[in-house]
Image 1 (cartoon, rainbow, N blue to C red):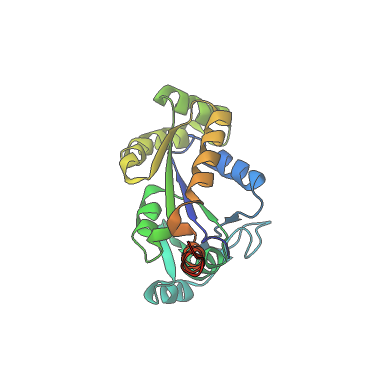
Image 2: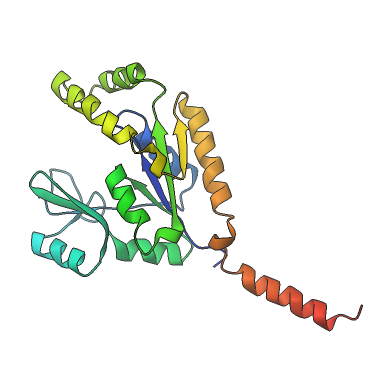
Length: 213
């Protein structure tokens, strides 16, 4: 292994562009793995276990939480959602990066986990609230009531911007994508992400000691 993998967290208020950016990153680097969440809700039509979600019983979900097998978890309405730790740890130990599209609460839990040294957290801001509302309307996924609810929630999400390693204003999607790629490329080269460097330095020191000056 030439390097240790990263836990790349993307967060933003709904409509700021994180899901689109996450998809672009997956296209840019096909070695990236997307973290598949576990949930206790029933599968919807067309959803595949292990691809869309890991569908588990509430008892199994609770057991994973009790055994510290979840990096982050939350209850949403009547169901539980969370990120299983085992596949993420296996990926980063073999030099694979894992991408998370989660909110600030999940990001905070992962950043406080025992894998925190591998976390790279990035928050995506909209250029304005007017533009955020326009994007929510134009994507045509929600009715006015749901859009209003998302807008009300956005301020709470934006207020946690300072808990992230990097913050990007997504005023131009292509430029934001380029900045994301630059950040990830640089973070992959951090000394802490390259466990093989110590062996290289020791070899150099050994060669230096054996070489007559």
